[in-house]
Length: 128
Image (cartoon, one colour):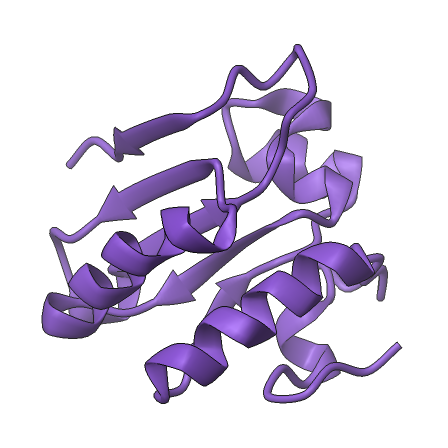
C-alpha cells in the first residue's frame, strides 16, 4: 500500500528484505499530523522485520517498529519541537527524542502502541 508523502523506500525495512507492513490507521494519523504541520517528515526508519530489529534495537525481535506502528523522523530544532508538541494531540503515545550528534542522526520517534508489553503513554530521550 502507498501513502501520501511517504515513499515505499522510506517505509520498508532497511535490511533489504522488502517488508513494509505499516498499519493503515497509524499511517493515517501520521499523514494528518504532517498535513497539520505543513512540512516534510523524512523517515529514517519505519517498519522493521524482527531479525533487523534485533540487530539495531535493544527491544529485540518485538520492538515498536516490528508492529508497523512506529517511525523515526529525521528532524531537529524547531521542527522537532513542533512534532513533539503536536504528536500527543494526534494520539501518539510513544515519543522518543534524539537531538545530539550529527544532524543526519537527529530524530523524533513516534508510535501509537497500547499493548501491555509497551507501557504507554511514554516519552524518552536516547543516550548520547
